Length: 203
Image (cartoon, rainbow, N blue to C red; front, top):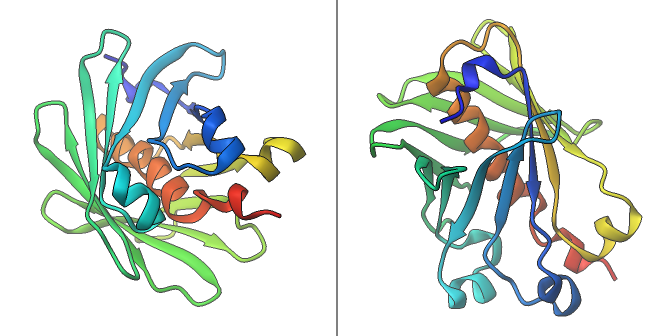
């Protein structure tokens, strides 16, 4: 299994579903996680109900399963149905709680709290109104631990598909594989909360 403690940067690329891009029928999300050199290291797929995908949209309950090249589990991120602010709960390969991601109220910014398995906040993730595609991961002292950045996908892809690519970068302060797994899971949460469905609404 990949050791995230050795990685400075990863790319999370969503798989484009052609039927979804053409007719707007919401399908289960799929992602591939790659190194900067283009090596595919992890795969992620959504598990959710067909009815909830069509009628609950981005508020639907779901699980995101992340596996390695051999199909062995790496983590699972679960989100229950929500009305206003979502939360993701992350388990490791053995089903052990790693922590959670809670969406918080933020004035003129997007704000999320990253907590450990004991529900203690260990980092916050924020995105300002002038840089809405950049989410900065910081500790309680304001030191940057990493970034999750949505990459520009090109005019046609941005307009007609909600498939996205995210760059996940880690600073040297981001210690431990468990913490980095939580940051990686946050990339899926950010895509589902803030970017899913946007492309189908254009035009």
